[in-house]
Structure formats: C-alpha cells, structure tokens
Length: 493
View 1: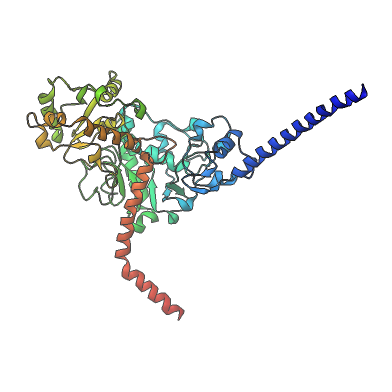
View 2: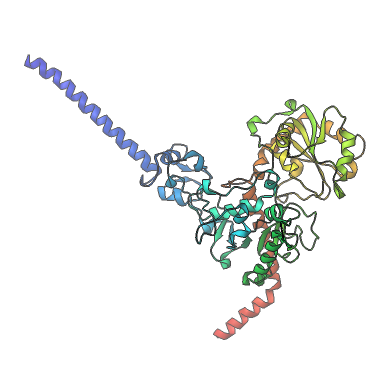
C-alpha cells in the first residue's frame, strides 16, 4: 500500500512543480514584454501601456521605427497625434500627457496678455482674481463661442485656444506653433482680439452710447500696440491680427495695416492695407455637418446635378447670383433657391449638398463665402464663380484638382454652365470627389487642434509668410549690420 501511495504522490508533486514553473515563466515573459517597449510602469495608466506597448505600437512608427519608447519619452516626444481625451477619458491626466518640445516647433508665438474685454470677456467669461485666461486644459471649462452665423468667422477664437493649450501638458495637439514667454524669442507676435465677434455683437449703439463698444475696443487696441516697443521695433510687421469678418477692425485696419492680417478675402480692403504678399487667407468655419468618407455618396447616389441655396439678391459683384437664378431655376436637375440659416436652413443645406454632384460658390457682397467650405465638407464638387476670390493655402493646394473654376462672364451665357457640368463624366467627377475626401480635414476647426486641420494649416501658412519678412528686413539692414560688425572688430583689436 505504501508503495502505491508513493507512486501516486510523485506524479502529483511533479505536476504541481510543472504548473508553478509555467506560471513563473509566464510572469517573467510578460514583464520582459513590457520592459521591451517601456522601461517603467510608474505613473502611467494600464490603458496607455496597452496603447503604447502593444505589438503595433512598440516602434515609433513615423518618428523613428528603429527605437522604442520609454515612459518618459511618451510624455516628451513629438509623437503622431492621438486623441487621448476620447480614448482615455476618466483615466487621469498622466494618461493624456504628450508634451510639445519648443525646440521642434515650426513657429514660436508670443501672445499679448490683453485684458479679457478684448477676447474671452466678449463671450461673457469672467476669470477669478488675477486670472487673465481660462483654464483650457479642462475641456469642460473652455468658454463656448456663440452659434449661428457668428461661428463662420470664429477663427481668432480657435487660434487663441490653440496657443493657450500649447503650454498645457494635458492637451494633445500638434507642435506646429507654441507660445513663448518673451517677445524676443518669438517668430510672430499674436494679438488676441476677437474682432469678428466684437463687430457682430457690439458694433451697434445701445441706450445712451455715443460710441459703440466695438469702436472703443479698436481705439484702445491701436493705442496699446502703437505704444509698445515690440510694435515700434519693426512697425508691426511681425504682428498677427485676425479680422476675418469683412467688416471687422473697420476703424483700426488702416492704422495697423503693417501687421499681418488673417482674412476671409480682400474684397473690402485696399491693396496697401491687405494683400497676398503679407496676409493670410483662412477658411470660414463651415456650417453644415461634416460627412465622413465612408458615408459620402458616390456619383450615382447624388441625384441633383447643381445645388445653390442662399441669398440671391446681392449688391455690387453679387448681382451675378440673380442672373444665374433666372437662367437655372426651372432646370429639372438643378436646385437653385432662396435660403437662410433660419427655418431649418442649415439642415436643409446639409442634406441638399450631400445629395448633389456640384455646388455653386458664387460671388456675393464679397468674393468669398462659407458656402465653398460647406461644399467641401459635403464632398460636393465646388463650382467657383467669383473672379476676385482668394483661396486658403493655395500656395500648397491645387484647387483645380477638386474645384471647377468658371469666369463670371462665361457663367451667365445661356446654356454654358449646365453644358459644361453635364459634360464632366463620372470618372472625372469621381477623381475630384476622392480628392475632396482627402483634403476636407484641412478646413476643420476644432479644439484641441489636430495635425493638418484648419488651425494647424493657418500656423503653417503664417510660418511661410514670415520668411518673406525676415528676408526683407535682412536686405534693408545689410550695410547697417556690416558696419556693426566692423565697429565690433575695431573695438576688440
């Protein structure tokens, strides 16, 4: 009996040892795997470890595929954008911390600490004691911008938020532009005045006012800037001011014309005040819903050939709208009608554009409108009939790849427009449609910003303009700088 017991006990002991050894080896291999992709677990969430250290993420992909990321590098390396605010919501700030390296930023921006009345105060934001700016690291604390048509000219709001967030380690954003503390460190000096909102909300007189709030703010801004040494240094040429609404900064623009403006177009500006040599054209914020590539209807599922809905009777250059209206309104495959933001207008436009092959962008009171960017968001091939229009980022984007351009004089000829559009075959249209899906993200305003979106593209455009300013300054100061060099050598010899 004892022999049989000993025989039965031996396999049991052997099996127990084998299981224990297997568990030990499994644990050891797991630790080795995590150490391969990151040197430490400390202060990093389990989900982030999974995202960073999974087999598909162990290499730094577009940064440097041959190296691995340590926990500290995860926080400090300029890695491709990941929206941790969605993926890691509720897991703590450490899990979302991706810090920009100032030395790697394309653009170093100094932002004036203007009083709140010039920016977020216009949104009825009131900070605490000695609090000049809202806490943008908490998405729930970011002041919201008023809706409706106000939004189409909200560009200064998005740029200001992006600069504020560039100093917050808890906000994930591209490192294209970063805010610096001293103006001497900066490539450009940003003036955070919400000029479009000031015009929309405060250009009319109220009560016993003799001067509008909008006019008072402009006067204060001019006085402030003209008195600054930073402005005097280059007469404001290295300053950036957003005046996207065509009537914004109306009283101050001539006094500040040496600065770089971010504008919708040049329709209401004389050439010496605004021009392509120094200024940046920015897209409107589109009003219709963005269509995802997977939901975008192809050629066969867009029954309407041509779509336009909006104000028809306009002044000056916009008279072409009514001429086209009478030419096209009775065509069976054309939607050309009055429309506005009210009466469910935006929802109607969203559905209409998404079901149309071509969307008309016709000059109105000014050469541009947000209708072009509504069409891009709807993947409806834009037909641009505006001879004086300037387009955002056209120095790096070829609009002919996804837009049709027609001169106004040709468009009003009977039959010309429809014959041209009906002659564009499915394959040609599809190629433009595919390009629209590729570039649509360049016209999206959002917070936090993302690589290649509208905010990021504007900063890139500013950077390209700066090289021209530096070149001009260097040319004009050639002899002065040589003289300084010679005098310096003489004093040391």
